[in-house]
Length: 305
Image (tube, rainbow, N blue to C red):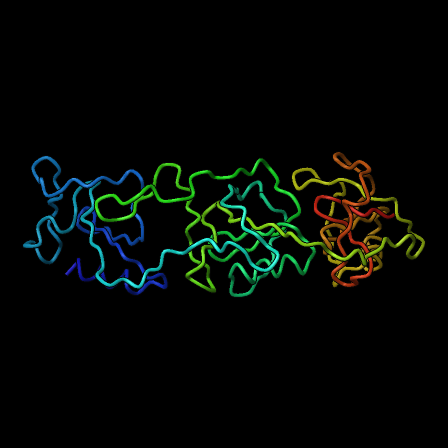
């Protein structure tokens, strides 16, 4: 019965799996691909003993794997769809599969793209004025204006061919093969893997710098970093505008306010490294609370004191 139970378990998952494996008589795993270390040993049980009896049915000898060996089963007529890269959406073009890390993000801002698809992600990033969009882990949408922390293009973004009648991953397989939450026919990256899109259009230059607000004066655009902050504390400024951020910092007795990524408000009493004056063009994103004024940019603070 263990084989039937494993099949029922794999069938009950939200992802339509097409392979299952039984190891050591009791471990059940489900997947749509074999890892690159997978090798077919065939039915030579003497040399490669896949001979663990199945609990409850010892006559199913060999059907439940062995030590570090899996008896693999493929579902007939599986509904699994190999997702594809969406080449373009409007003015957004795919750049390929790129590396990412939870400790050092390739793109700076995670946004809510609803029931994630490539279309919903690039739309969300475009609405906030970003030039890069990335889908990851099937459901995450990331935005930015430049790649960070050494993110690199993964050259091998294809399967290495058919092996023993099934797809397997090669050692360099980027795993940009997770189906999008909102459309399983589209690929939405993978674990620590972004499918990156580039905006080829132009944004209107409607937002302008607020020179003074409530006695605070703009000091220009300063550089910032996610690993070492220019201003020490991020505060809640509601639906962010220059005025709401300055008021939030002032109410907490800070002497410096900075706005970043259109939606972040930072406060401090000194400008720390890596904060140095930079081109005003780096601070060009409109505030989420007022799209006529500037609220910094990616790794760039519009500073007031």
